[in-house]
Image (cartoon, rainbow, N blue to C red; front, side, top):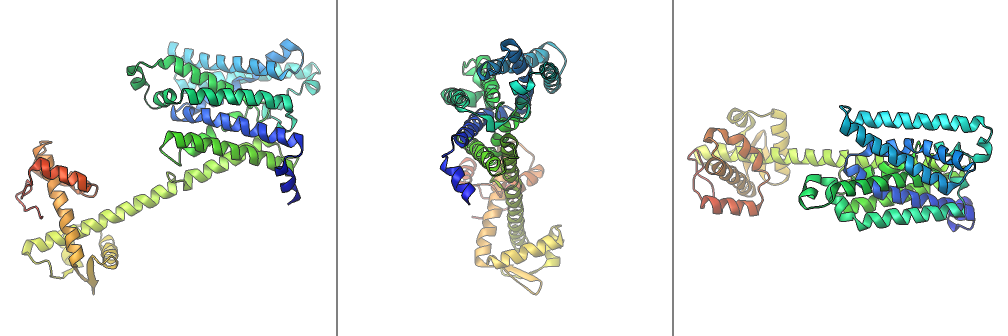
Length: 427
């Protein structure tokens, strides 16, 4: 409890630097990463994060000392060149983009490792602290680093918000953006530069190996919470901030635990939870799909009762399960479970393996049959589909026709009385 209070009081300057630095780089990276995820270029972030290492090493060799600002510039140039190289290889050769990304990633990272080894063998590794750029070391952040992060974060967020509409359009449909007259290539280049800058901003805290995760994971998690891009970017920023704060806190209470990797772990846990339990995740989708299947089955059973009763114009007669199955092939277990559900809903009077429509059930069954026959007539008259080929399509659509669409169908069909087969359409 004391650790919790001491940490969130932010009295220790080092804690402030680590927390604010982690949150700033996580939020800015997550905002930019949202558009990378939507453009299906997630591997690009991984390529950039590995490709910045030779730029860092080259900047150190050029300066002869550890100058964070100069190393960030070197990392930016190296990362940007890697993306240009990927685009060039893809455009000028038969190599696919995924292969080009893998090729550039491995070559640039290998070059970085070679330069890193050379620096270590020169005896300057301990003084330079170059090894922390591989996996990051947020605990070493100081005030000047925080200023640098703040400037980069402000630039990333400001530019992204300024071009939010344009980035949204090119993320979903580049061809439409071209029709609108937007400079798609320049916008894509700008987004690429922001991606490189976002990766570069976090290499000192998270490292070149793990920074791609902070770029992509919060945005991927946010994608399962909403279809609205503004909310998605907001969720991604929140998830990034939570990951940065949690990583810093875990590192504070367990000093042996590095901040960067724990930021990635927390972000991954959020993504894992979102994948399964967010509104667009696996579990809610499965539950919704099962609910829709049960609803369709129940409506088909009501329609079956109406059709079999329609034959003898007797809607009060009780029907047995065997009689229903003889009229239409269905799974007996599904039929019985559906009849039990309809009985609980008051739409069927079901007992002793016999059932009949209640007054409420008859009204609903009549409605379903009406929608089915209206849709069959529409497909025949307007889509010019043969009457003997419209049943299956109508079987699917009858469950999704809204009252507004029903009125439109009636208007187009001029309030018909019979369907394409000559059967009466109930009112």
